[in-house]
Length: 433
Image 1 (tube, rainbow, N blue to C red):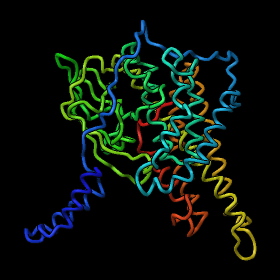
Image 2: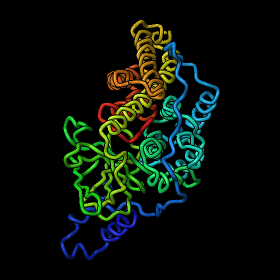
Image 3: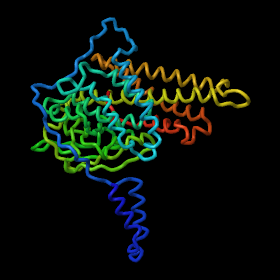
């Protein structure tokens, strides 16, 4: 895209277009290219190939279940260490870079590499495949997502996008798919990857994708467009949902180098640091081994639920950032000779944020704990989704209101958090616990 814009800019400065009467059209093209980006072929910087032979798929174990049915929110020592490390990283790396990423629609150079060095994806990859995981870690993933979002939700999505694909491969990939792709996610150079479920359709239902997949003699052919895909322009591997003729929604592994795959910039109101884009699939031919989980409906349902839990965790982290920001603000900001926190309306508004946040965290972590233990969590996931959509947006709005005029300007981050929290109600996919 950079080369294309540079060429158009040079052309716009040439006297030739004045003589040809093309000044207006060329300037419009430069503006459109700058605003929306050019549609381009997907990244093709890596050739995925099997690094080892697997006799059977490698899966993570299920933690021991508590027969008493008790629910304990106290993190284990490992979870506490991981959370503290990620929280520190988010405060030192994501928070300072968030405003610049929001303005430039991309993470600062080197930031995502430093995030990959944390080894966030390693805890979700079995040791047999080069990772460090021994048990399924849905709760740990929720705590990590929450900690990252406390720094910035857009950059958190950019950081977590690759692990969504690796988690799906570990949970439902067959031995060949795992051998082909998973080792790359456990290495030093983690590939950019994305779980693409969302489509630009009113009242979009992830269980009724407009993207179509049909069988061919050699495998499958995909046609459709996916929307708001994080890091779309640089992603090397996509996990795409499509309606498989005769079977309903299914998930397919699509390498960005496949013929017919193109990406287009799609900047949005929020999550701008995630560099979201459209994924165009035009007669993309895939091998038979590209179908994940055998196309089973329960696998697809699990992906949607775990993704929605991921967004609930992100909402909790950003809401906590709002709370942590407004409390000192209302205590330090004075009006009529006293802190505005002495006003009952202000104090009650801050208290409401804290109450709603605790409710959201409780339901989200309870759903994650049940999912981790292999128990039914459909009800809890639905409640977490509902609370994240309703309360997350309300918390963001309250944060802006509590800062008054300061809440409307970019000098303070609450306006960005409000925009990000509104994304919870429309996003599907992208992250996976």
